[in-house]
Image: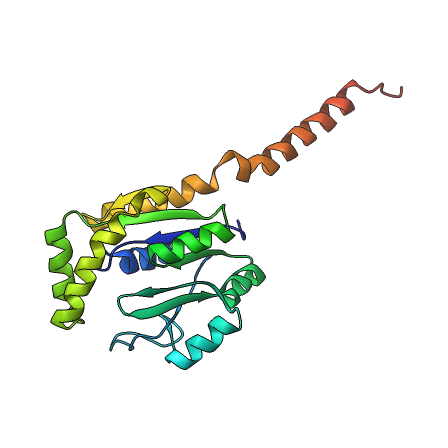
Amino acid sequence: MQSDQLFIVCSPSGAGKTTLCHKLLERFADLRFSVSHTTRERRANEVDGHDYHFVDDATFDRMIAAGDFVEWAHVHSHRYGTSHAELRAAAEQGRSILFDVDFQGAAQIRVKVPGAVAIFILPPSLAELRRRLEERRTETPASLELRFRNALREIEAYPQFDYVVVNDELPCAVETLCGIVLAERARRGRRAEAAERLLCEAGKLSRSASSPRAG
């Protein structure tokens, strides 16, 4: 288990990153979801402390002043932030951590944790992105237009990421995302300790076989 692995998943609103993150958590039991703090209103299907920590502006201001956030940013007229407590909890549990953040938050995390793996989710088209936003029925016409306009600025940030996944067919996108996690866990640097342990064992066997036997 890689307790120090950090995975960042980012996308424009409506591209499907929340759904993909949930699928990823279902496949990897050792992944812990980083629950962000936000000042936006809770939606009907959301649970405080599970989807987000919903706080007011005064509380968010106090957390900024206290240095409680690893990252925070203004997103769609609200503020979102990841607390240091989320990282500590993952470390104490020996689990990898999954961040669902915007591109500003992703950049801040990577400055502080250069080894974090950053994945950007793209919609198949802007027309499909608008359709998904409208289908959610969680936005006012004004907030929908704001999210759609912001999507173009967010997509421009894709070069900052290690991987890009197009969420056209959900099952395919899930498999691609899971493949990225598996590939990252198989990197030479992360498996070097296991290889060196085998080489050490081989050396001991060789010395044992070549040593004189009493007799």
